[in-house]
Image 1 (tube, rainbow, N blue to C red):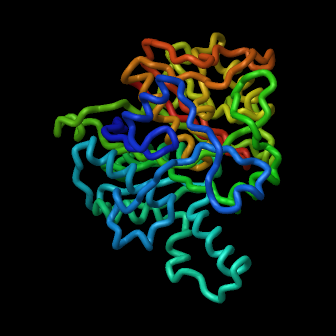
Image 2 (image 1 turned 60 degrees about the vertical axis):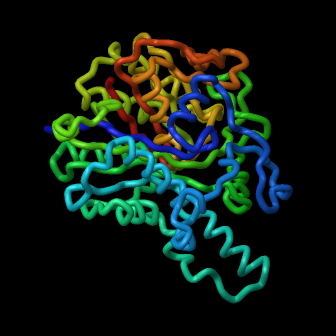
Image 3 (image 1 turned 90 degrees about the horizontal axis):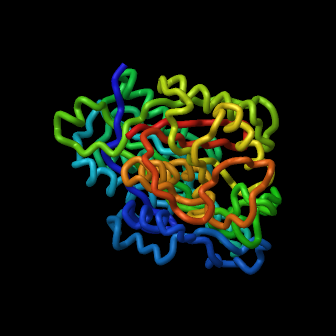
Length: 395
């Protein structure tokens, strides 16, 4: 089977509107979580999040096409532009495609449409409401922008969406179904309706995200996108592309248990399966980017899963305390932390950490980034619905 590498990366998130800025913020351990600013935020119980500030799509995208783009599509397109520029704009066509993960799709468009009909009493919604809100909008617009006429689709597996998207892109290239793919995730759920729905689950923290820390009290939501150029290794080398990392393995499992409560057994099977797919021994892993949401159940379960697979776990950190839990985009944004470790030798910290939890006996790189020689990194994503997706990357 063919080897698959990453030759381009792009992002928009609360830390920065590019990869360099995101890496700098991660290395500094600087959190972007703060007070939310949007209509009717005062009606929410949870009023903090990792919001993309000062977003001006007119300056980044064709203004004549903005009426077609929900915010999640805007984020995805800008991230894809950066990724393709870094990759050297490899050829598109029928051997190239795109797969973008998202949980909520055009959630802002849905929120605006409901507000127009129910709050403002209008009898019409925007004529592009359906093409804006559909989950495949971001992948489709990326394909149009870069002439990708191969496999193009979206993946919606809640918080594992973008890891599934990247993993499926990897598998298609490895198997010869495609030569290159733009893959990642995008989410823009920070609006009144989106957060009001999440409040109902009672998993949101009112005062901060503290993954793996004793006394943690929930997740904090974020937004944004990250997109990567994946391509066949020999072709990338032939055209002189700068290889950011190699995708070594991928595994996806289902707990087939509870719709919201995670399973350590299911997570462990995904981690072990990804390592087996990569033909990598556990002791070769130098860093794990954890799902690490900051909820009591998730962090405890994930720590158990990691301890099940690794006799002596490597450093583990959750960057959600920096950029928030970006739901369907979170795995893609967190993959940037894996690239930071592999490329720059810097492990991003678990911010907000106050005290060790005996139920999470891991080296979580608390509060301060760490220099390390990382040659293999794991990215974990475990979603509501019991869906698990783990990626293995190599230097």
